[in-house]
Amino acid sequence: MTRRGHRVLAALLLLVAVAVTATTLEARRDEQHRRANPMQGALIDIGGRRLHLQCLGSGHPTVFLLPGAGETSAVWARIAPTVAKTSRACMHDRAGRGWSDPAPAPQDGAALAADLHALLLRAHIDGPVVLVGHSLGGLYARIHAARYPADVAGMVLLDATHAEMFTRVPIYPAIYWAYRGFTTLLPTLARLGVLRAPDATPALARSQRDEWAAIPVVMHQAAATPTLGDLPLVVVTALRDQMEQWLPLQRELVALSSNSVHRVLEHATHMSLLDSAADAAISVKAIVDVIQAVRTGKPLRGP
Image 1 (cartoon, helix red, strand yellow):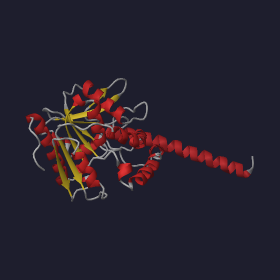
Image 2 (cartoon, one colour):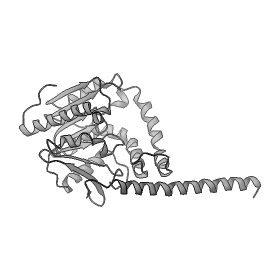
Image 3 (cartoon, one colour):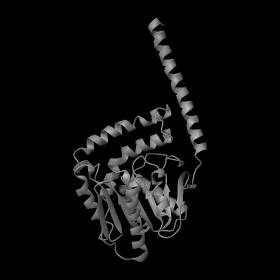
Image 4 (cartoon, one colour):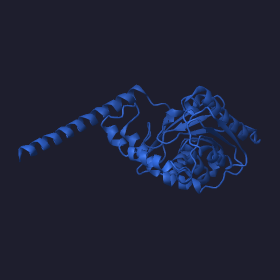
């Protein structure tokens, strides 16, 4: 072997050693994080694998909180305890996130709906439930309601994604493909410890990559769903950080039910509906209003 060949081989061996060391350290860091942050809730076997479920409070109907793309149940930390003062509030981590086992294959909206349906059955959660979907979680809520209508008593859509973003929002395809390219790198970056967020595990990164890749299919599935009939529906829209097409598309979501109200917040952002005290309070109010509509059987009233 030439001198140059030796240098190349040495460099490759060094890269392998660095990668192995980084991966080992990252696995150790993940284990330390889990020990320092014990699981709240329970692991529910849905048929050969387990999903993490946490429920707070009591009362009927149960509220089930569905986070947006790439998120875990932790995003509901401000909202779930407050909702639990009125009724039972439950949240879960989708496969591969938090404490949940990974799925055997990438999941589309139908697969996620099947997981949630099995979770409701195996955890003995009396239905029907109020589904609350933030962002992409809104598409999952719609798909679930179409496939398992007996599971759903009402719905709240918090700045929910519209099913026709690719064709109705000119900038969206570019945003989608740019971020999809980035998510393909996430599992490798997580293994090497480049992603330093406490929950940025390789399993979470793979789940995020697969979820983002499935978005076109999920949107197609949601677009094919029927309306919600007269189920109580509150749509909350944040305008501060959204594109100009957002409000007209949100108004179309309101039309999914004949028993719906629309609340538009010009000062709120997509994420402040969850993490800002004032805006999260408006999100909670929407959820409580649907709870009361389900309990009383009366139509929703005004904004």
